[in-house]
Figure (cartoon, helix red, strand yellow):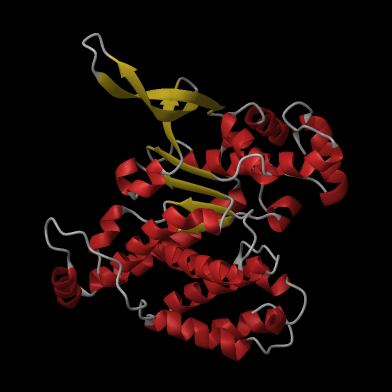
Length: 365
């Protein structure tokens, strides 16, 4: 680990959110949901990522009798003797071994939401591990509720998922520009952290409701600060280059899918108007399942036809060939493949790396 990465780790070892993540992973805390809001560019995603990675490292060092928060260098030395050199700064051009083996489940944008809902359903049916880490980065704004029935159903499902997420995940971190972008469950159900700019630093305040008695005998509620995590504005503390590129790619795909709705013109507008909830009426989750889109159907078909390939390099080429005329289908296929590999313990963050997975695709998909 170079000096820049060491500086980032030592800083986060003194913050609160990494401690909370570590306690959750070790089982001393049953569950962690954190909502992080703040202006664009304040560093919400970086704060979430480095907090979670620090928590993972603390969890991995604990069996060796090493407390990362007191002996960071000793913990790093132990982990690097097992996993090779670790990287933890903006200058990381590729994921290290910890990023690959203990990767976060990262979901961003509407497509990420659909993938998350599908993954959560599969986990609920299979009874998967509860020590899962879900990183929901700008996944869906409340405004998407009015983009049409598919997004409305997804938003309602997202609300239910946040309410029940304890059954499918150990840690869930959600980021958004303001709390108004999030369903109420995301704010009420856990830690609410607000990021803001300071003098050569970024401040992340954990707010909570404080009840006090006034001089008139009345009971009043106000927001109080439970803790403040301070992160320097140095370049090294930015999002790792490889992860920033991956998230940007996924957000571009999300924008493309929204552009398709806009290009729908009159028909899309009529569908939204016809399906919009009436004033004062809370829409209930629909009884019928969400109808797969053309892209989703093509993605499933491509994966099914290509899973018999001799290796993942051939599988990747096959999927690309079958979806070459539909970018949305390719993105949907990628999300399904990422989710399937993650369930099997193969954490792959980039589509290019799918070709490097060893073994026959049929054993994973």
